[in-house]
Image 1 (cartoon, rainbow, N blue to C red):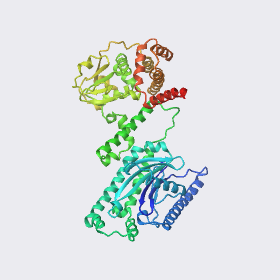
Image 2: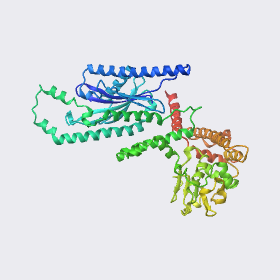
Image 3: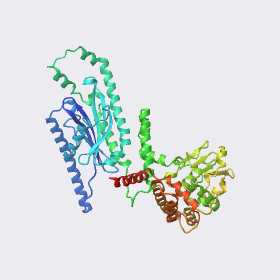
Image 4: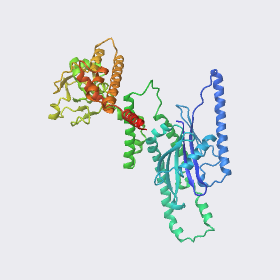
Length: 559
């Protein structure tokens, strides 16, 4: 990640100062030359780079040493070479010293330090805030206090800032940065609090100050003595700066790897937008819970965001490695159930009815859900993988139940649900059988109170069945065919949503649009039901974009 992390301090004598800074140095791109010449020049570049880093660090340190500087403004001595960590996977080096190695970055960090400890603070002077511009970079800043028995007010003011030029990336990383910077800040505060309590127990400073005589002549000397305490003495941590280097280096590496850039051949699909929205909501919910409960355990907070997103978006991930037969694809499911039962089940899925599977094998049920979910947009999927009690349809449209769970009467008599009972044919070693033996192991009974014929439509299902029945098409080809069909009908959903919901057109005009979209004719009723149901799967981003565009168009004529 092209960013920089710095620890800043507000000195009572010298104002805001940068104490410690960690930056990432990416390896240079290989020169277009011969392999032997490239290796020699690369070695020379690395040696020169190391010398340059040392010279820059020493220059920065000596320049700082010449100016006004107290112990509270200094982290590492001028002779200290700094800290270096190398990522073996990417070759990125993480360098830490009191100031950045480049003069341009020095001024950027200096400005971020001054703003974070003067004007850009949140209410209460403790907490996170975001500020910046295109010229000087964007800053995520978290200010906090450290206890000091000799300081004015018995505390000193610090901040941790992350500076980057990518505003969108930094804002999207807000929950991640806040969660992990809180860990570092809480560790510093708790360590300093122990030192503060010990010093107050030996010599209470409040009583000393109350009993000492005030003299304007000695006030500057008193303030100078109090301002000279470093963060190392406040925490009594012998390896404080090495620990901060490890923490900041990991933060830069983890923050850079949690979000990756992907080449999109066109605009992102609705499924992609919905997945991004769900992941963002999950991260915000995690941050809210941690703030309400005072944080979670270290192991939970250090879990990578990629794993969190995987478990959130794939609720059946824990069944992936379970033993036993599983459905591999829609064609496999169709072969096991039969063409008639498969069409009935797929029709209920596409119409938005609740699909209930009841059986003793959770892995088999989840494999069926995984296959059937591919028929719907991501925004239309609400799944309860395996439950010991019935869940209402507004909570989930895919529900897995254990064999002894009764189905309520209002559900079994409803035309908006379908039940698949999975009954074991015989007792045998299921784990030793292959996936093709599902039909010999289980009997599948499909029941529904719906009397509507399922052999007319929708059009999407008719085209899908043609592809599934064509044995010359591989499973991958059928999967891409289904993807194209879903995108085609999602585009029709967007047109209908814009026409009926946003513009508020009448029924007659809507019927004309349906005819234009090719949703009329045989299976028209099923096509309309599918379109209306899939409207619920549109992303919030798309809906808000449409509403904003319409409101802007309404205001423009009056202006």
